[in-house]
Length: 343
Image (cartoon, rainbow, N blue to C red; front, side):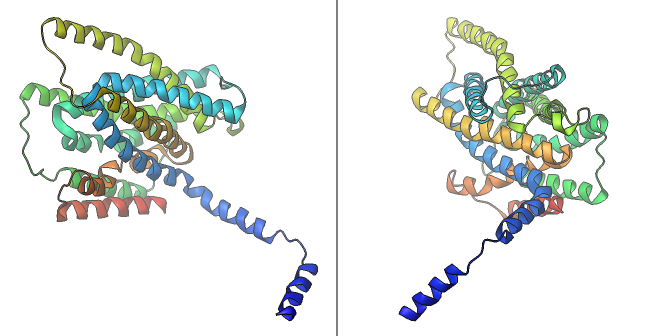
């Protein structure tokens, strides 16, 4: 025993510091650099899967417009505090052009786009809505080509087609129970879903330009967190007139004796909204900007659109739904397409 201890002591005495482990870590980080954008896109889908469950439960208790307003306000506070802790000051040092791009991005993607998405969810249901939202990568790729000149190779186009096809195959599966939708609401829901899809893609593109891609040198680019902070702030400003108009509309309905349908406790709804904001508008939007910062817009948007596939296990666990063979095949295609995008 004492010989072993002596051997260990001798080894410690002859030990010399080496930079090999540090070099290995640097090399590993260097190898991971090309995949940061793709990994952030997948993380965004996972975060939005969780936030969709939380927001769905919250919307049934406090309504979609109030939910949209509160989540943006809470997200602005979270991003402001984060930026203050990281940068040491409250207002990001951004150029007027960057602020303009990010302001339009927040209003288009988070104010108009998310409000249209909530209307579509009510009018046509999540299955049809998510099917139309699966077209968002096509809008993103078109906008990326039009504004930034991003050109994808044929293999990337194949991967995008496989991912969209897999997502669509999953969502188009018929539900166990049929839901009747009147013609007027169905038309409005379809239009709103396409508006949400285009706004989501356009918002990501504008946010990428707002960070400085395509017109500013790299050293002047904003970080994704700072870009998200500015974007979320202007999205909150954009929600003010929408909330006021909706509030007046609700007061008129109540004056006629028409109360909005609510289920559950308002207090629980506020708690769920706060949790959903942390998961989605805070971490989810942050990761989506990391994805658009480190990957082409079409690739980033595709990987950010996998929530309908990732939600399948939660549908079995939480909603007690039965997942058929068609859903499994669609999920396999979508995941394989995403893996192909990593290459």
